[in-house]
Image 1 (cartoon, rainbow, N blue to C red):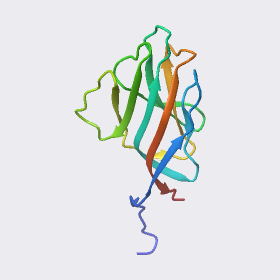
Image 2: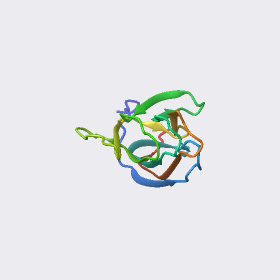
Image 3: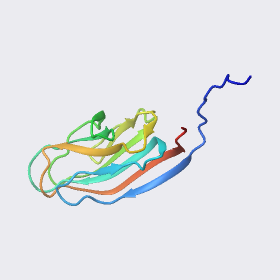
Image 4: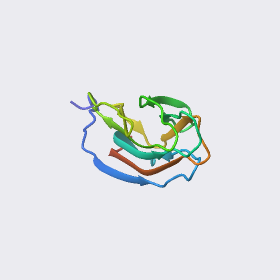
Length: 146
């Protein structure tokens, strides 16, 4: 019938694997998703290398909107101590995975994320020599419908 239309999103997207540049010692990860697309986050991975300063570091991954307003905060359980190298994996549908001293895990939300939003890390007790490396983001990218 003319005039009787419904929009049903069709989940046919492209998988995008992004290598995010290392932010340098003492700095946090920050990445903005490109505009004109919608995203579903699949996997976010990084290696965190703590420097020799004694401190328990607590690392959060945050989802922020285009105006830098916090929309979600994702914590991997446990702190990171002095001189530790820890792999962090945030993945969709991750369940029943035990975090260890070398591996921390958390579940990503199953939500539509607009382009222009960003992912960043925030850390309690950040030290000057702390370093994020091997940063990878895998997501499904969909053309935004207008």
